[in-house]
Length: 79
Image (cartoon, rainbow, N blue to C red):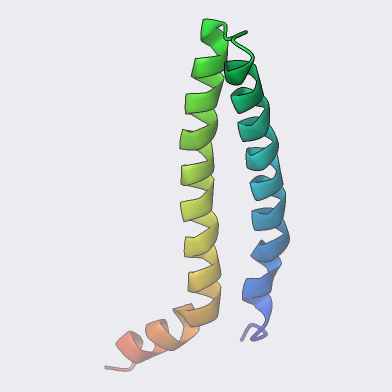
């Protein structure tokens, strides 16, 4: 089988994506507050949130699959 710590492989990716999200969010808020808000800023702001939500769900699903997947799969397959 796989090592019990294999789910931790996804933690650096989650940290990296979170840093990118925070940087993008802070820049978008800065441009909106300075009243220099071209329409593209709103599009990028919206797309960043949607992208991060999808990536967050995928990474959490992978982490849960690696952490609990073997136990759950073996339970259902042994029946």
